[in-house]
Image 1 (cartoon, rainbow, N blue to C red):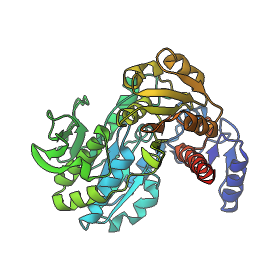
Image 2: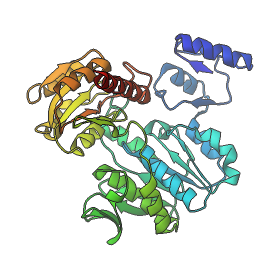
Image 3: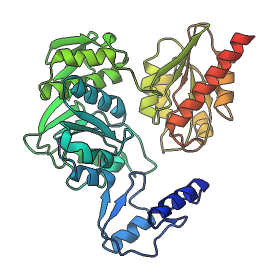
Image 4: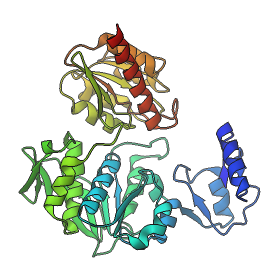
Length: 412
């Protein structure tokens, strides 16, 4: 096992694996030994890292965890990728399968590794796997029976040299599909050389097989159900629902089962999650918004003025591109983290901005500013790694700050 980290937590990991007889190399950038049968690459590790280049130069075969798990999977795979909406759509599809009586497990980038699920696959009907561009970089034979591509907007530009390179990584989800396989894709995606059967969806009223028309989720013009019957709001969630519906239809699952799932599905935490409504002010946790598109969709989906809490680790975005969405909608922005100064420069000409030290200060300032009918929205538009372990920790911290604020107000 190899890790460049020198953190105290890594020392604990080293000791734990050492007790199991595993040799651990930590705190350095290269290996001293390269005689290995294979190297399994964590998706968070850039293939251009020195240790990976070293292993490649030594002729060591490099596999990603996704590729390794998929090779051991004994049932059909349904894979979901896209810049935003992957987790929600993966969960929807998994729940639809299970509601229809099929044995299914959701895994991958969602949380549970596919390598953990693969040994169970002999007893399963489907494995539904959320896949990131990082995971797709290292596939060779990965072959989903159904591949879903939700959208492509700027993200991870701290890892990819261009949107073209990022987009190409995403498109690898289709690379091993054959003519009998299914590709469920957002209608605006450009896909050259696709071998599988293409099924399209869009939140527009026309131009695809699955559409949103006057608030109705429609399949080839047929009204299936109103989106407002679900707990998922906004055009982006309409597309998540439509993609899941398309997968269900392609697999012959009853529409009634699909509608039951859509009506009962509880949105995942940290994704436009309403934490509280107090004195007419709504507090929303959208910590999962780690890129500009997700942030913009969150803002656009809110009725009334917004106090926006944004900022975090720099991923290479140009925040000035958000002006069209934010201007006239966001009344003020509270900025934190590594990107605070850059965002202030990008937005300061059209939007009152204030830098804050942490989420606690952001919540306090927002409470002072917010008026009845307004929404305080944590939708950072950045990753969390400058201040937190992940977006979940950031969202939980925000939840705690809001809870403490409201408790304080109650006791006054």
